Image: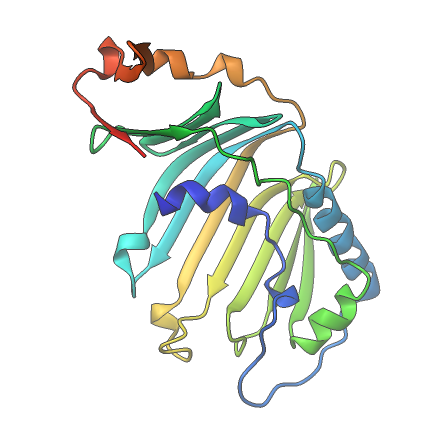
Length: 243
């Protein structure tokens, strides 16, 4: 079920703000002021993804060192409304509504049910004041290019201990991110590029509104029978696991 947490990580955008460092000899690079300001604006825009919102797109993960973590063109949709949410990732669906938390795995044909959980998807980036200093201290080189209505900003440090490259492409007017690219260091073999983890996210839907009622709901999956949960007919062949 660890993949069900991937959305919470999608908008933790600044690995450079995490306590980490570069290894070996590096050269400080002062980021361009205009590019840095734009990057800050985009990050603040992403920090505003809280409250009611809907995000959707496609995730790809290449991880030769850990093939089990790979994802090939996996679609996702996350809709959060108040303390309720609907989250679809590939063949799994997670519901947090009407007093229950449901995890549905359509591949293994299992339904897991537990009490509704507290929503923890509103924690954004809290610190922007020293972003330029942080980028410089982490020895990232910042570059930018513009292509029509889109702008791409990249942070690259081939000797960074956790993230060697972080790239975002966004709409120049709305500042909404359309594409994320992360090239993550393999801690067991940091100089081996062949074992780096590559994560890409194409974001096709970004709305500051949400309506979880338009998606699969608790009553479509389970029902209360004499004080206990039972799957409805559509899921009658699924194993029901009470957590």
